[in-house]
Length: 266
Ligand SMILES: Nc1ncnc2c1ncn2[C@@H]1O[C@H](COP(=O)(O)OP(=O)(O)O)[C@@H](O)[C@H]1O
Ligand SMILES: [Mg+2]
Image (tube, rainbow, N blue to C red):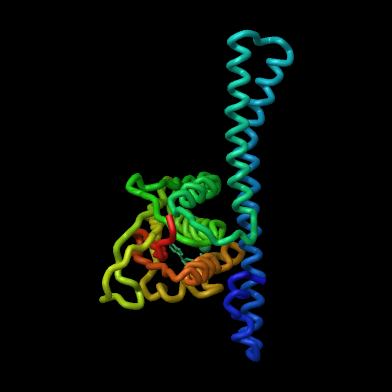
């Protein structure tokens, strides 16, 4: 059962409506499936990212043990082992943060999460010959939330951008603090908000589908290619945090999804 649903008492609110109950149960099941697919991505990322430093460490250590290198060369080998181990430790910490299920909500910098999301998504993107890049104009954008969930929002948006892109395309990420009127009061005084933008120059989305795409199970992909839950999950997480997602898109030109969230403690 999903944590958002527990907190909000969603199940209670729909009790008595078997279809809604069934849909929520299905949502939970599919959220679970999304988690699995994140876990699979993490698995291939780990095999890829940890394999190389491990090999370096093994070769260097063998050179030391065999006495093949001595003096300054030995120190160099030892330093390389220290560096590679540090790299592996930071990768493992990253993985832990992804895999932990019910993290505490806390102060999170969207810039830091965007960097992690980029790295995680880049393995799958590379397979499709698409690049994922962070706009150099990106800056810190602090919010209060659960890091894993915010990471999931970004991963879902990036995955869509990658899927929409042609070979050789680039998905851009940007994190910012922006001044904007709140969505419920578009003429109201602008507030400082944290934002993350994911844009692609891919196939684009017809205007008449803008409302549909956030609905659970809405997908234009072939059976088995997408459950139609990526945006529904992203939307439900962002909404839980008091934010919203804007979409701009032109068919044939590309799409821009912008997540707005209230700013949290820095
Ligand atoms: N960046 C994008 N470019 C083009 N179409 C998109 C993009 N993001 C979402 N879509 C459309 O929205 C639909 C729903 O997306 P999503 O909820 O992530 O489910 P899924 O990716 O499993 O289809 C997609 O099937 C696609 O038609
Ligand atoms: Mg998707």
